Amino acid sequence: MRYFDINLNLSKEDILLRRSARQFAQGVMRPVSRELDGLTAEQVIAADSPLWDFLKQAYELDLHTVLLPEYYGGQGLSPLQVHLVFEELGWASFGLSVQLAVVCFPFYLICMSGNEEMIETFVKPFCACRDGSIRGCWAITEPDHGSDVIAVGEEYFSSKAMKGNVQARLEGDQYVINGQKSAWVSGGSIATHALLHVQIDPSKGFAGNGICMVPLNLKGVSKGKPLEKVGQRDLNQGELYFDNVVIPKAWMMCDPDFYVPFLDMILASANLCMASWSTGLARAAFDESLSYAKQRVQGGRPLVQHYAMKQRIFDLFARTESCRAISRAAINLNLNLSPPHVEYSLWAKTQCTEMAFKNTHEAIQIWGGNGLTKEYVLEKLFRDARATLIEDGSNETLARHGGHILAETYPRQVESF
Ligand SMILES: Cc1cc2nc3c(=O)[nH]c(=O)nc-3n(C[C@H](O)[C@H](O)[C@H](O)COP(=O)(O)OP(=O)(O)OC[C@H]3O[C@@H](n4cnc5c(N)ncnc54)[C@H](O)[C@@H]3O)c2cc1C
Image (cartoon, rainbow, N blue to C red; front, side, top):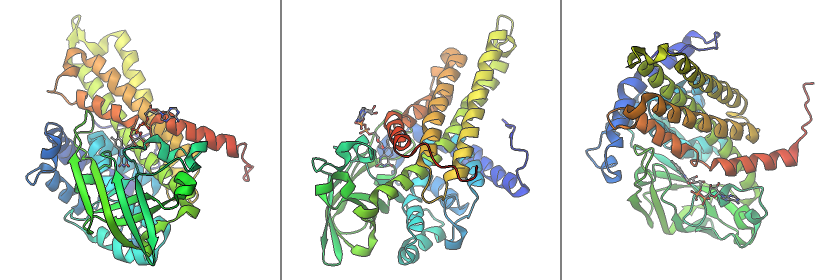
């Protein structure tokens, strides 16, 4: 369905970019995501899985470098353009949108760190990759630590009782890494590189952490079984194990001194992506509801001709537009901003995922029994949306972090007044 854009100032380039993303989203991504959704977690990543051709096609269209600057070989899109593309991808499949972003995430963070040597070694080959063979992932969550790892404002964050499951020990000019990341690492089973959070100084709890780049073909790296789950089944997830894995000291992109601000930068970016894809997901639920309500006849006329249904359709539209307004405002503010106003990314992620979830929930209600069958896409949208409330930080944890920022830094001095 064509959807109006309240922004009447989109340039020709913006419109062409969105059109190309929409064609890929509708013609390739949505059908593949439904196929993957019906497979087991092992089959999703098997050699004959349609996932591989999907990734190849996406890389050929440069959809793996949406977040990267042109200077290093990325697409060099404006924040609004990133949003336009991500909304289309989120419409097609939340899980595959995440997959396409995590492949890029370590390389994106290297760009933000400004480490020229790592940009040459890692980022440029990634940007030039066209066959999908270089794939990153972001490994922060641990078997014993979920919300803990991002709870910067809590006292326990910097307590030595917080023992991370992955430790890095400095030996001369190398780090030696040992431990395990949880099965929730998106794209973990198929990744070639990891942006890895490690504990360097346990006496400071998680404030003693660092973040490094680890090529996953190094000696001592192994992977667990891919995870079976309810939503976003098209998104692979799996554990990573590190047994005396050695990396050069220079690949530790951030050490304890800079860990908390770097973590905030990561949270700010990841949550902007989540909010943008949620807009697409909310719109998908709206699309399905409106077209069904126009076609399904009850009481002698299409559902949409009944007064109460008009109001429900409007509510879906209102939530979609709210998602879009909030996520665009936040991405315009925060993408590539250093340091970011993290509370606005948290605002966008928590609000947009809740509204997208509500839209998918309400869409099923509008479809009645048909909304629950595997024959149609709605039940998948609903399952995918449910996962977003936990993904990249549970919404309650993100709200606590946002509240901590407000308590510490507000009221802000507003210079432009
Ligand atoms: C689809 C999906 C994709 C993901 N992708 C990645 C990825 O790419 N990389 C990665 O590393 N991780 C990833 N994750 C993991 C995700 O970030 C964690 O699941 C999330 O941070 C929550 O951690 P947890 O599941 O361990 O829940 P827990 O931290 O155990 O929380 C359980 C519940 O307790 C609440 N809670 C926790 N602490 C407190 C507290 N102090 N006070 C009050 N309530 C509290 C939480 O809000 C939640 O409701 C992904 C998760 C999902 C679902």
